[in-house]
Image (cartoon, rainbow, N blue to C red; front, side, top):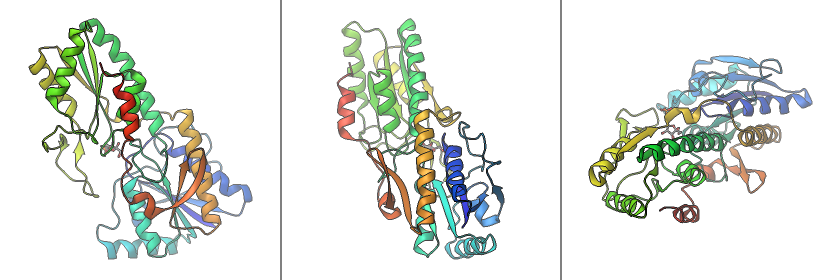
Length: 344
Ligand code: F6P
């Protein structure tokens, strides 16, 4: 088989491990060759390709980012034109299959192509961990570890200065990073998109803590968290990307001001931002990405298209892309209840 690969959407640690795994699994039989499309779907439209071989994928397992580059290009922004160009790329590159590694947007395009009869298999990645039909996406555990390390560091400075520190983490629709890092880092409050918060309640809670003798607090907030009463998201930019998403960011700064104004406690905000997506993947993400890559190549070889490889409990399975994209995977309420035990 001649197999194409691409990485689309925001990057995350583990992408290179997945690329390497597809290629290495394909080379086991010695009957496959691989090309990588550069910068996501943009590379398919432009037929910007690089040959992927044993040599070119050697040594990339621990490397962050993606050797192929990525973008948020939507190739179906003009559906007919896009489809025509993608079909041409399949023909001219003599592709028998394509592995699309990405989140909801990249995999949404993969689904549309599969529905048009193209041989596509999806591999789920996102630090947000908000893709349905898989227990975890790779990138997530690395982001959680980075956020946890940051919270640990912020704890000591918050304590030294008797401050409230608000830590803003990624999480557009779902509060997975906030909840995991908040639990791991011993946060005193965790604000997530799934549960609009009441600023009065947050401040009351912080005051109660201080009345009980605690002199500092850590509040973890997901970038997509919103206050009650239908207040809108805090945006870093109103410009929409090719898939219609605004850029979030800044809720931490809003909270910093409000908490200090309402409680009188000195407050600081730290926005972790893209540091959560950078650098080397943790062992868990390397293993998950490797298992996904191997499984994606097996699906292609078996002629099973229109599927996404997924983690269910401890096993790797194939699920229909439609199932994976039906709705975002929101935070498990039980997990949030566990976190709440430690607020205060
Ligand atoms: O989708 C993953 C994600 O990291 C979100 O958590 C975040 O809102 C977004 O990407 C940031 O995107 P960009 O890299 O385009 O700023």
